[in-house]
Image (cartoon, rainbow, N blue to C red):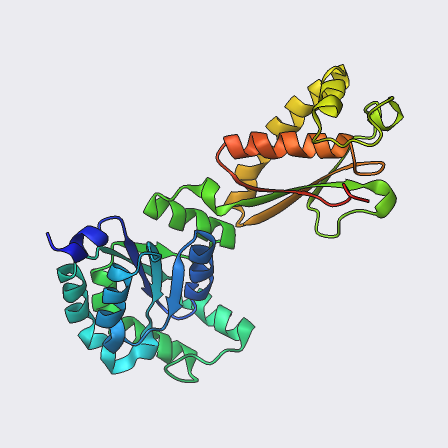
Length: 290
């Protein structure tokens, strides 16, 4: 096999197409959340060059390309371009999004967007279906989005490509002090002021929850150990549900009085636990230096 074939062995190109109003723009946003490099409405005449770029670019491993009726007469050259992509050693999957005429008309009416083929939406959709019939026939997967929510569309796309859902959820775990106010972007907030405060223990006041003496002190507290296990299990059980609903970012805030000891330790432990379970986690201690 050529060098290009070797370099493209682990690369994936998804061609996303379908009926206007079936959700292609939303689907491309889903692919962005999956970590794909997304390009919408690339001229088919440039598809060969784009394929060569994907094959040779080390940083492009997963690419989603949107193609639709706006290509007009150039759609006739798509089959030839696809054959040449195979010749370059680049594998691809074609996903066709469809929806009932009634739903498509309703979506255009709600958004007040003009259909690419004209102002008479009903006639335009019928013409579009005829034009895209051949492309729909060669698609690897046809998805009817008529009754789908965004979360359901995202889940269907993920299952279609057998993507690992954990990698698309970015979790931020933030410690804070209640005396300085709640983090404005927090989705879930936990109050750990019920735990004994190391601030009043000799030798611990000037330390923080990342220091071993503070951690040893808190681990001796039964309430602390119990809470650590329960919060980790709770967040881990909730994350798959957030992912299915289409959420890509979740901020968990843990607060104590000053944001130096208890919240810092619990935040660090939770971030470590979620990371071990395969989630992308960002750990941040807002008030640790105040």
